[in-house]
Length: 227
Image 1: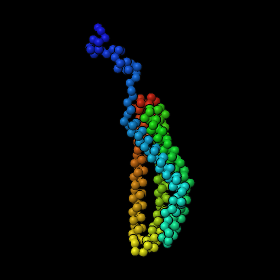
Image 2: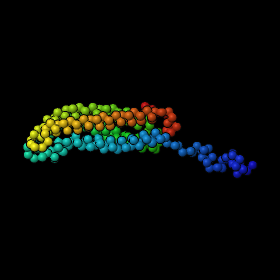
Image 3: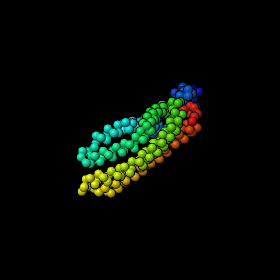
């Protein structure tokens, strides 16, 4: 039986390039959809998180200078200046904590970005790298939310008091009680957003860690998961 007749009869031969690829174990590994999702999320989170932490670092270092640039003149400016000094006193108590969190956030962002690229490229180290980074990120995000909440709790009465003073100084404008009410609504909305955003990130980080630990991914990476 000839080679062509063998293939026609349903018996592929080694001359067939597709058979050669299979015999050489040269079949491309299909990336699981979950790996793509985790990698993309890590890359985006790494970029945005790193930039956000960099912005937080700049704001912590130059908060006083930024605030003074937008202080108006006159009596209202004096009241606003007093408010800013009291707010800076509150922020000063968290100065070194915020500095440390900013640097840690930049490092986590860089680690997530590198790990996400590694997942796309099927690097052996990326699996355990991302899982460990996400574990650190869970702790980091939890501490950051607590620090932010404590800061807002201390800043709230300061802003309420001086909002009423500024409203009284302006005379016929919006009343102090109304300004304080709007300020309260703003703080509540801000806290709800922070809690909701934290919950979403926490869910994604826990899911990502658990997904990367699945034994079914061993074939993609070529090694077993490590914590």
